[in-house]
Image (tube, rainbow, N blue to C red; front, top):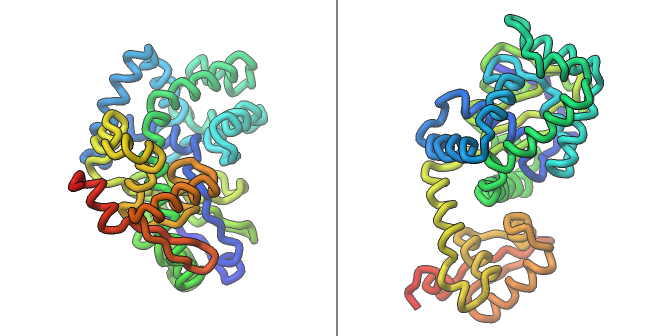
Length: 328
């Protein structure tokens, strides 16, 4: 069980990360390749990724990365720096980790066995070993994470919609309640299921909640309490997500030929109501572009829009549903 002493002041400092973190997705997906957790949801992904790593000649690379970040009670914090700014910014932060920290964390990883030669050179801050680590992270990401980013981004956008509704409707307490049962509040503490008994002190620092597609079962926190506190929580994709993602990649909807691919994507995303900002985030569009396409769809009678405070909420009309279902 993880306990975080949490005051009203801490609630005011609470942050929600705007997106999944690429380095956390790398590390947690490596863990999924080492276990059978959430088998129904992730076994198709495991098979596809292992085959992709083999085709790319990266099986050994992935094995080396799993040795650095084992699925265990401890894995090194320097691989998940939470730098923000995307993959390259994160890798740059990893490669600039001070030598003393590399030595301490890798010594903890290999405390019960011999240290592999590559890990030993990393612990010494060897420039070539660090360069190879950066290349390994990029190569693995390109096979195991990047092809699945549409599904990741869709899950993040849906999660943010839930958090936003909870925060707007019930404030900070409602936001925290929306994370249940993975995260709950007991008197003056936040409590989460965790592999070991642990307390995480905040000492006045903001806690950042980070969504993760490849996090399963329980939230995850950094091991070192002196680092900026984060709590990475599962997004919980539904079984069959990979099949749906494959279908979306290989067969763009026929309606795209009629209204264009971007508007077809927006209409498809509006299977559930979303704001302009959520559409922009999900489809990686600027807010003005998403608004312009939504306006065209609204003028065509395919979308209905209503203003809610500072946001505009869009939903598909019956005509839009019929078009997407092929009934027109």
